[in-house]
Length: 248
Image (cartoon, rainbow, N blue to C red; front, side):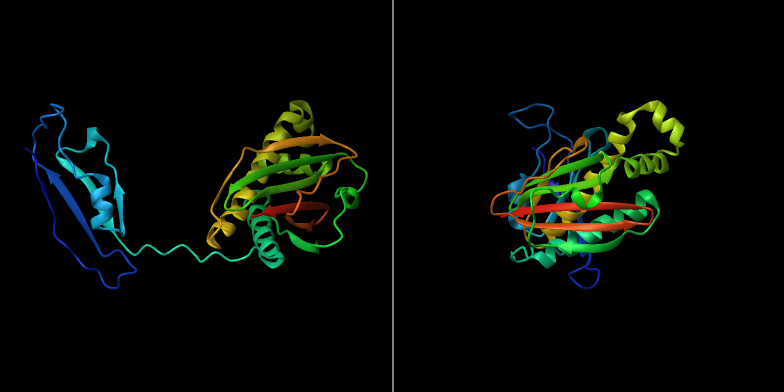
């Protein structure tokens, strides 16, 4: 039978940092139930014995006699669940939009207006009469909802050209599909940042795939009983509107 040998236990200062690592080595051998398969400690047993551990799986072809490596470090408890307030929604979406703007568009996004009251069905009116490109990504879990990013068609094409390194003529030649892909990625990254903020506040959730719509005379309907905020951002020559709806 095979047995596991615990390595040295090394403390490296305070518990909040990496304290020690134990490498379990296995003696070459086989189990009776499954010849050729080495015995290993069950995952449940390890996590019960070491509740603060994280198990790093090593692919079989790289083991060379080494079993899994277990890292023991401080695991921060999940934040206590708080109510999702208008302030939380605003702070989260503003940070997400600004971070993505810096990374993808290399420019600053300035919040112009935030509206949490008197939200009518037609949330597109303030962007003008030009056609819109709207990306939306949903999230579901302890918090559920949608994030819509509303671009004018001109801004969507500008963003696609900047990110892909294409001229306006090249964007026109390749058609709406390249614009759709870029707006989908911007929306996905922005909603991901917003979702991470919700997780930090004790509302873990997962994202859906992005959906892109292009047209004019569009509106976004409100989710019943959801907290909703509409945020207008200035990108210099262009404007962006984010419609965020959250329900717990």
